[in-house]
Image (cartoon, rainbow, N blue to C red; front, side, top):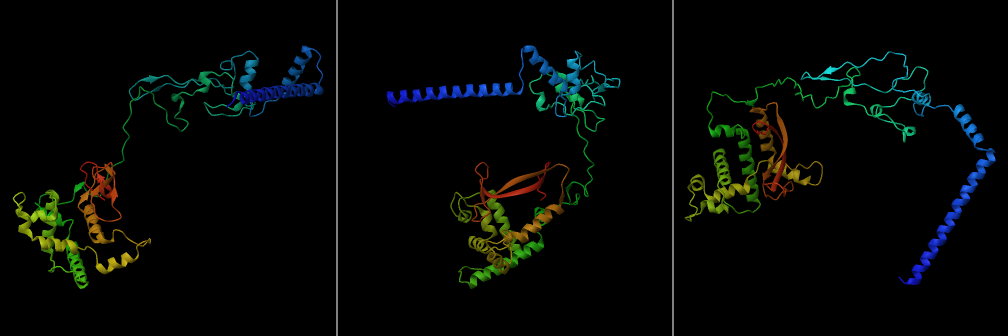
Length: 373
């Protein structure tokens, strides 16, 4: 910016300020002329007499400051002690805390107006617009915590000398004894405990639907060797899946590998690798025809994403409620089931130890972590 443009800007601002000052002077002259046109006062004494007459004739409205307190100040009295409310003042009785500490009562310094006064009731600690800028007593504006009276239907606030009291919990009356709902004097094998959740009806349903799905794929032109699946073979397949979860390997074929670094005898003793892969390709929990009908509803509200696992899901949830009863302390928590399957409900949580999987909300017992629902 050049010097000439800066100088022109300064000249414009000086002219603007002078014009604005002249405007303010005209406004002040107009106000004085308006006041003088109403009444002509001669001398200072005449102005003071007029102000006294206006203050005598002015009435207090409901929105004004406390008329009783203002009148007491004008009369030279102390509004906190000299006002007569018509009733004899009685101090609040002291109260005793749970530890036996006697706390002094709260003395309210707010004057009580008489019947004839027109005072607007206000909340403790609040003030109207007319109260702004006026000095008040600290005791009159701030309400102490001990001023909460039990007679008024509100509880009294406790101070630091009163210890916290443990709330009384309602009686815990469960329909069954908390814990496992089993015969305690009976010895259960691992297979029997497993069959409490994978019942015989569920296993038979999985076997039937798997055979039907394998036959459908075979008729569609898929080439694989398939023999009819039975319940005992399904249990063996599930045992291998649990074994692979405990003993990790890089690939599925490594469990049947003959290399010296592996040489795992258990998978070979249960079933062959080709049979395990054939069951994995055709394992189906729900009915194939019903699954096809549900797939046609994709994109609508009637579509069920969990339809493929519903037969097993419903039975496991029912078994969790049947064979265990939770205690008083429960927790609603989220749980990640690790999986990298190609399905829409899979989530990625970068801050979780298990980053990929299914996110579930469970109701669990806080003492042992058992999942109730």
